Length: 387
Image (cartoon, rainbow, N blue to C red; front, side, top):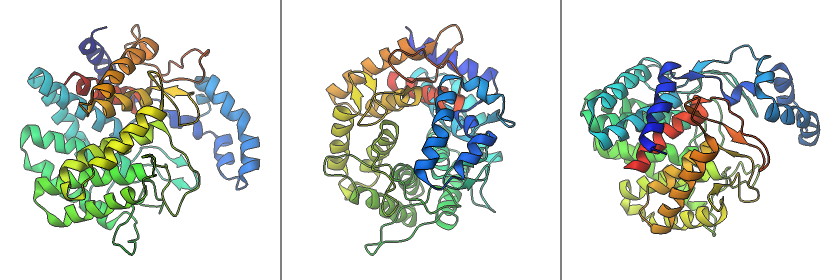
């Protein structure tokens, strides 16, 4: 299967849908799901919500009928698309891809959720988790990915407006996000501006983007800020090279999953170059080794270190991204196999987009089109693999 053709097909589908779609989050916004989120006792919550979880896994589109707001344009998906377009522009040297990326970058600049002059971005929907996150609340993950899109745009255009945006993003992290410095000066950035959660992948996604921004801006304050956030996560890498999802003091579970481990490793790959004084190479390679040996079953990206299924498109895309950033032969060979698996199992050629998830080996694929969760990640991953 021709990778460039697949890239153009999923890009065309995204453009035809104005970069909008339903989303996996829709199914957590029914009245029943909202009720479930208020149950404090975890055992009771699991008993009450288990039938609903089975329902949304097997009949997502039927459940979605009961969701009022369910079709959005996602800054996160736009940022991933920009990165894919820039990468394909570098691969093909055709200006049309850069022009598309610049246009999408302008949309992001006009649709931010930061306060005052600070720039931040979040998800355009109300989210019910351990607490309520209002729509468009600035998130570390989304804001970081937008920042990386601006870095790619600056590297291709040399327009100062992207440097100005990066400085304002730093101010958003510094003044709007929450963090408490440890005795050694390190800290973990909050997940959003309205919580104080400690989560490794969002912390290093932010610090990697800020480290690159600090170097581009020649700004020692930003570099020092990024360094202290990075050190927090490095200090809590497990001895086997893995990273838990939650960081201290919020270790609510000792979960090691595929997607978020990939996020951490992708971030460390750039941080080892942008913060060479931290000597991150050994932590990065140790993490890659754990990822390779524990989070894949052959070419299948496992859900976490204890089980294979469900397998979804974002795990596949992130695995391609993570391994495409290294030249180590065994990892490159696995990337080839993951790509073959993803195209065979998830690409819907008649619909020109990727499906979402397989919940078991014997189940059929959920063919729902989720631009933010799936196709935007593949728009980023495929040109990176080609390059």
